[in-house]
Image (cartoon, rainbow, N blue to C red; front, top):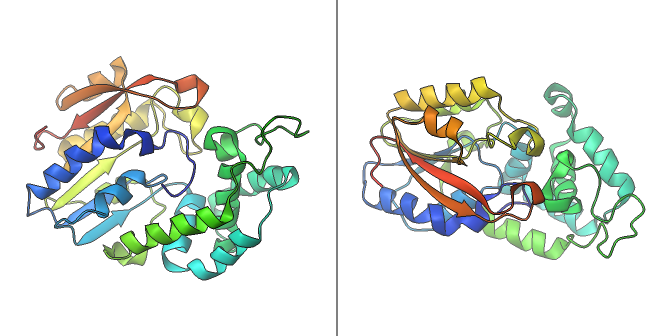
Length: 281
């Protein structure tokens, strides 16, 4: 995955990837792959590194700093690479980066994209469980008197190596408009058609507001369910398993499983995969 990210799906690949790859393999009319909630991109990367019929890719994340990082890694990596190799984590930077990255989007968009990208990488590497701006402080705390310090997750050579691997895979595809969007998910779903497969990983219902800058309220969870109900695309949706979500999607197919994370509040929790009615399990 692109970076350490709360709720990232790298530990759930064996639960999710087989469904997606089998569906794409069995449907030659699926020509595009879409993720409205890209996040750290572990699902997209592991789907697209396999041989398939996919021609076009549509990727989006509402978090502008995250979409900025994706665009920089894929289309303007040289300058970022050197900044990563030169950077040294510090407690002062953690709090400064948090202040910058929580500014309004219209203000943040005036910043240099490469600078934003470095800040986004660094704050997720410096924070407990990759919580980034949602963390109260850095690994090791303000006084750095823990067994683990702020630099314990910072390995610039490995980060650069990982980014190059991601670029090699994703840039083989026709990425729509050569852009990882930072739009509302509704605008991205509108770009999907009957030749599109969508994987959706929206903010968790129960803990989403504590983990992400762009969390959902009940109305957004409801709107997503209604939009997907009308979509002609095939899709798979992952969520935290709870009665509210099961009720929203009672018209779709579902399969529950247990997931292990290393964030205390969501450790060993139940997750659910929801399948569009035109997608067989």
